[in-house]
Length: 76
Image: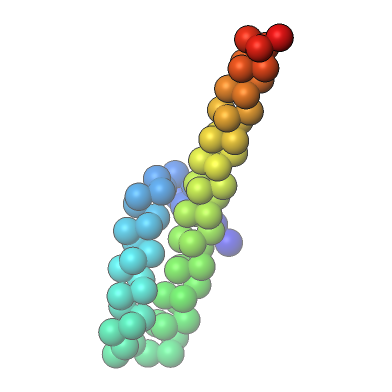
């Protein structure tokens, strides 16, 4: 469940926070409840990163398709 705050995160912000969450989970020393909360936050942050990357992929695909369409017009 991502909120409006998560949607406002840049890819870099979400990635950096995700790295910190993973670091804390790997370090241990947290209660079960804290670990579950960290894991849930990590899942949210991973989803934010995934949306950014999917958006970037879509933009690249669109740019490549437009470039190919332009080359096809030039050849014709």
